[in-house]
Length: 411
Image (tube, rainbow, N blue to C red; front, side, top):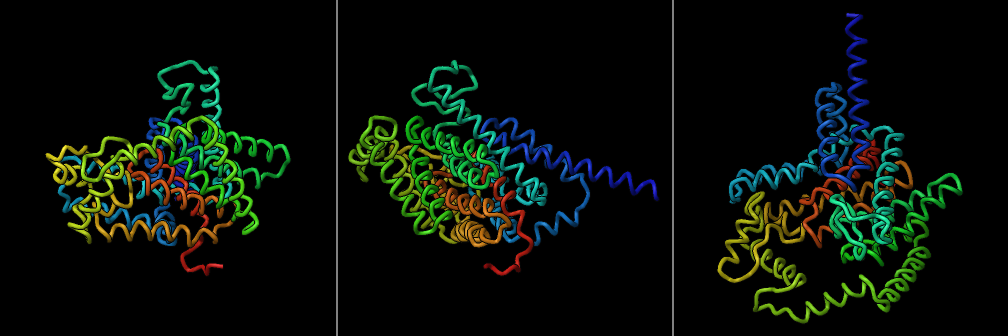
């Protein structure tokens, strides 16, 4: 008996160590490689399952209101597969996309210790910094074309598509700014601050992406409010106005994209099938609202959207779509207003409990995460996308692991 106990203890410690470091490493992989993400996720999940301490893992979920809200939303999506009118395979496919929600408490096991959370944030920052510097290398011609790089010198996104690249860089600029404010030395403040400025320039001058523009301005305003309340948000508004006004007057990706959207909006007519990128998006919204009206409470089931959308627009000449480019609408079409309420409840719980997190940087980043998801989910079906969905799940697990229980009083 005395021999078995130390062996069990060493086994639990070893598996926990491997699981924790694979979970931390996911932060560096998210901006770079889906393949590495999947390998690390598999290793993390395997060690979590075989690593004992099951009561502690259950209590982590039970006492964390944010983790419970994430599992509630996933549970509703799981139930939605039971009555889904999806084509064969779509219910399983869409549910697999939402699996990141169920993994939040599993990921959170690695982030109970404050030291791990601090290390993980810097690993994420390191991955984002690599992508940022590679983007500048592509833009300057220093990085030759190769199969791993998706962008060009004219539009230098790196491992992800431009929309995802700009989302990553916008939140990266926000993370760099908070790391600069939290740094202990002047050299570290200068390092992180420089990366933050480079990320802003990358979004606004180099890589085309409207979602990134909107997200960046929102996070700049939030950062100003977080750091200096009314005075800070006043400075942030003035800065954002000057930047946007300047970019609107200077030829570049920002000006080109704004003009394109304006031109496409003038061209589109509601009584004709859409023919432009902006028109398709508006058409998807209108048609999805029609689908929601048919089954507003419980929807048509998880994964049903491609089939019911095809049925709605069949023979009309309108473009088919597998998602409406709006996560709030997509969830409502699948699992109804019940599902929409669960999604909003999850975001609300995150916003509500953000002030209770242990450190200023965790509180600030958590609020930024909620606003990021609110914005990108209004413009895209972001929980379906691997990078955006995993980034959200990983950061939610990390930032809210610091909550002690659900009966703490909000101060």
